Picture 1 (tube, one colour):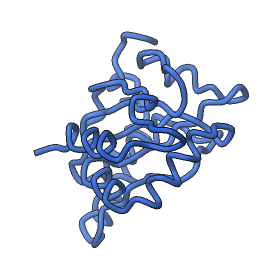
Picture 2 (cartoon, rainbow, N blue to C red):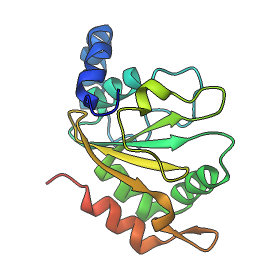
Picture 3 (cartoon, rainbow, N blue to C red):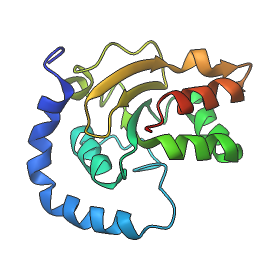
Picture 4 (cartoon, one colour):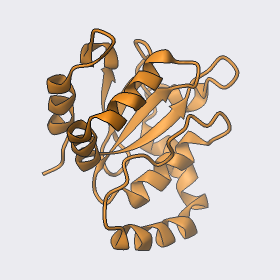
Length: 165
């Protein structure tokens, strides 16, 4: 799967979501504030390709940020809490991204889907996709950490770097 391109893999999921996408687009137009997460949990049974297609439909032109991790991941929980507690960083991420949580665990590694991307350095791990689902970048979150949390300036710079004009 690696090297075949994310869009080609995701294309198969698009067919199954055509009806949903039309309805979701209409909902996105009426939403007063952009939603940050497609889903706020790491769902072990979710189809990440379908989730990306759904995110494309409701992201309103923002880029897609794949947050790969799981409920087992301490730093994933720290990231969730950080974004919850830091309104300016949460807002910056919300202006730049629709976040799709992709489960990675021993039981459900999502090997086929994640095989389209460079290897993760650790967890959580970010993959930045353009608004159409094409791969743009891989980002280890260790570079964004500071102490037992995340560095505000680096998090804001990351969000700003990927904000669409």
